Image (cartoon, rainbow, N blue to C red; front, side, top):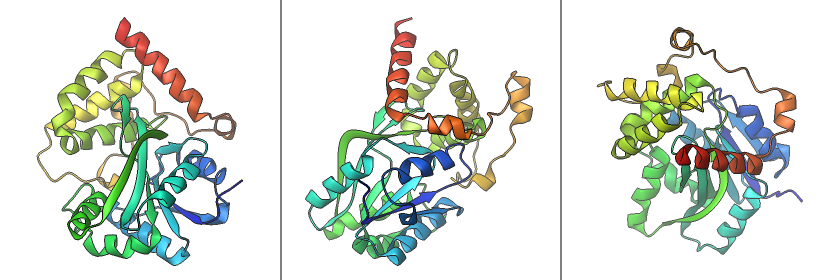
Amino acid sequence: MQITDVSVIIRSAGERTSDLCYELVCQQVPRENVVVINEFPFRKAAQRSFEIGLDLGRPWTLCLDADILLRRNALRTLRTWALEADSNVLYVQGSILDKLFGRPRRAGPYFHRTSLLPKLLEHMPAEGVSLRPDTDAAMRLESFGYRRFQQSLIIAVHEFEQYYRDIYRKAFVHAHKHAEQITNLQSFWERIAAVDQDYQVALWGLRDGQVFQDTISHDVCRFPRDLSFLLTAQGLREKHALSTVEMTQWDVDRLMIEYGQMRVEVESS
């Protein structure tokens, strides 16, 4: 049975999984509850998604980036947590299996209490100040007694089946956004790049990001949309768009199992 009291705002930047993300969501909520936006930069997208959630007026609002693919019953799980949470909880959040990190981490879509979205809008940092404007707004509100509710259960996967251009961009940003973890990430990517080209492309993005000295932005418009010059030099071509057949055959749980098996094989070799 679908959930009817949740609005889902999908923030798309042309990701390879945008349509797949939408279809997986529509298996869990009615299509009329789902809105896809294409706003840049990220702070504007976060603001717009909150505004739409308020306009739609349903009790709960899920903000979902299009490079995140939900597991079956993910929305029902998030809703159960939200109903159990205190009224001062801004949002509940599970964990994601993150391909670039190679492990689960507490991140991913925020399941918001819609009535508290005005508070987040009020405290969101200005454009260019933060790489995590929505998270920073929530952290500011903690000093006023509001809380965030996070769980370790994996509810989605992140960064799987993306275009090489987006893998490159994310790794470029990670060089600054997650600078404290770069040594471990680079070591992991170097070990696994031989069996998955995504990680080779991530290494290129990482190295370019490390020498970049200007202000870092999530804005896709500030990154090349065509990496053919780089890919061709390495014997690669950009990935094709996901077909309808590929999307109908998609199974997030199976992907998680296959990825775990691949990781074990690489680490044991």
